[in-house]
Length: 558
Image 1 (tube, rainbow, N blue to C red):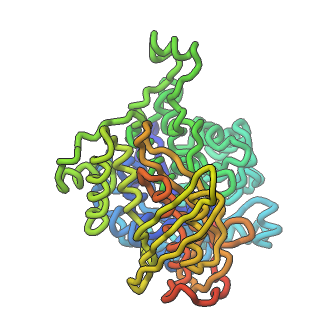
Image 2 (image 1 turned 180 degrees about the vertical axis):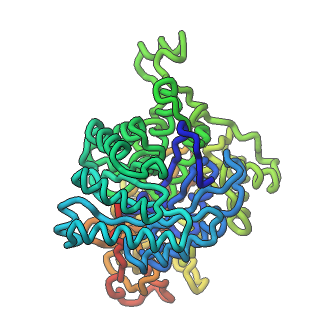
């Protein structure tokens, strides 16, 4: 697994759970990280960067859990019999590296990924280190990491703005110290394809010992060039691409896994390179990451967007009817975009339901499986056709919830063109007691949210609310997504929530139901339950507002 002599193979290094989770509001619970990690392993990624163990105890636990499970088991459906390399990020300091080593040691193939900034602007203003000090730190910390783990990756942060000659020196020092992979990050998305390709060619031609390591590329999308830059780096000799599902990540995001994989697949005669990715799972994995992070995929997103294979123009439709390749360079089935009908129905049993869930990548168990099965049976009574998309929406709503301080017992709304929209909500609180409240709003959903706010005194601000149909038709499931920002609260530093504007923690909730009001209610409750979990929970509904949340900024890398 660690050595791939095939020069035509490009490793996929997925950093959805590390760099991708740094998107504001994209915080995942440990259970959700494990679920996404299993989906990524099934997809066929070679390296899974599970997180930044030093960022917080919760991040450490999540990385360790992924290393001990996904890093050792054969995930059904995975193209390779070997589990992926499980990687932990660490700054070039001994404490970070030691923590990363402890978190990943349970994996069959562990990797430490350490980084140190090398560009003049970072050396002067962030590190306050000279060239000589950067070289010394690189060699010392890579050697320390190598003493703890047989597989070490080194990244010269902001390589795209580093003097090439100095960059060559740093990379040679890393090779001499034992690095097996050298990652070249365009940390701020500054370069253009010609520049980045030339940078990688220069490294391949001028760094002593470069033939002993794998060169990787990690590009950000600040100028919309992440995919183009990554492909330029691959053409110049890089054989590992650092990517995320849906291109999520800090600021404008990272290189999109699906775009790189399908470019190499579709333009194979040009690149003559291959990956180990099962392309038929791209759309499914994209949907899971979108649901779990709350980051909606834009309809016109390449490969996995809702409109990626849609044709409205009459000229296009005519061409498609005559020959598919007139306007489609890849078939939707290749990326898993076709709508497969679920053969289960209202008479299907729990075992068949659970088996189909596992086939779709949702390994629900216990109470979560029982709840999902009941929802499936109820849906089967309402809908004539049930698709895999319906089933995935139900499973996604039940999985990875974490602790629920408040659950929905009942909701009822009254609204129309004449009159005031009114909602009555009954919740079951942490003590098991039912609390009912009614409120008036500008619309039914607003009224529901106000009623919930009166019951749960959680200081928060609604940032985003969206509702989308899971499938076509008047009986389609509605998928609701909600993001709230905490405006106060108490904490103990156990988690490291992502931040929105102003530095406040942002929490996401989602749910699916044939009734969009019910879906919206459950999604809002899910977001508030996460907020309460960050505060350590509340025993009553009428306590004074707690003190501001204590948060730990990760200050992550590339």
